[in-house]
Image (cartoon, rainbow, N blue to C red):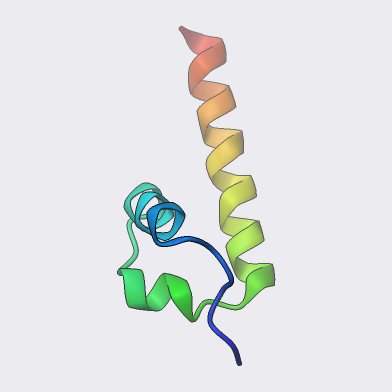
Length: 51
């Protein structure tokens, strides 16, 4: 499996937001990464709506 095709800056920001090591993020299957991003977006929208 190829590493994700994202910039280093984007990878660092995603790893920080998702609380996963950078190496794990880069080798994460794309469908799992998309699922985690959707969960993160749902949480952020819920937090933003409550403020």
